Length: 395
Image (cartoon, rainbow, N blue to C red):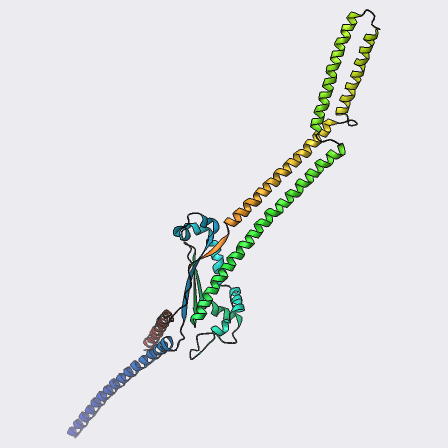
């Protein structure tokens, strides 16, 4: 009985031992299968997107054609001194940097796209074609999306130190990219010319208006002086007043001479009523009356009133002289502004002309592939890290 019990226990022990061994082997097999399947899954997850990226960027994606040109905004005054490459590219261009910023903003504006569509079928040139469903625009695209697409086809950069504006354009055909780049250069010239004309017109309008104002003021001052001369029948009150003063002086000199003669006659004749003495006295009396009349006419308001006339004429002549000086100053300022405006005019100089491309631009393929691949690998690594953290936390 005891022997049978021992054999039974031994058989049970061996069974449990082999069962545990079989379970361990089975677990190992399952773990190996899972690991192998996981590797295959990872290879599939990583390999499929990379394959898709390679297929799109190197086989499916439409060719792009790249055109570049370089221009600079210069002023006439800047170009007139130190003409040379250093002046063209150096610090002599600092005064035009602000205009170059305005130009860059303008070239990236929706207005340029509207002007382009007036002379070029932008939708037809950049519409989707072939098996590449990503590149290009739809036929029923709205204005906002069309403008955003247009912005992606051009790149306007400004070198702040030299003022050079680089214009880059992309197209699905050589003709499209070349036409777009040339159009942007022409729009740059039109914008700069219009900016020159607006500034030139505003400056000249101001100085020309000032010249007209001063000319009208001069005419009024001359008319006032002429009117005063006609109403008083006098050309120069000061000169005529001087003549009147000289005339009174001559009469006074004659009066002194007659008084001297009268004194001599008085000593010569005993009778003071002698005809000779009476005649001289009458002459003295008449001469004194005439002197008093002339003096009264010289200063009396009812007479010639030369003092007031001289004062008024001096005032009118001073006003005329002042108006004439202002008119001369306005004319000088007008001419100086005209010359300065011509010197400050801006123009665009083409440093590098656009060239029609002969072959597609391949850089976008490499750049797009590696950028997309890097984004995918980073995303995949981040997701794998999060899943690993979740599994670790769950275990």
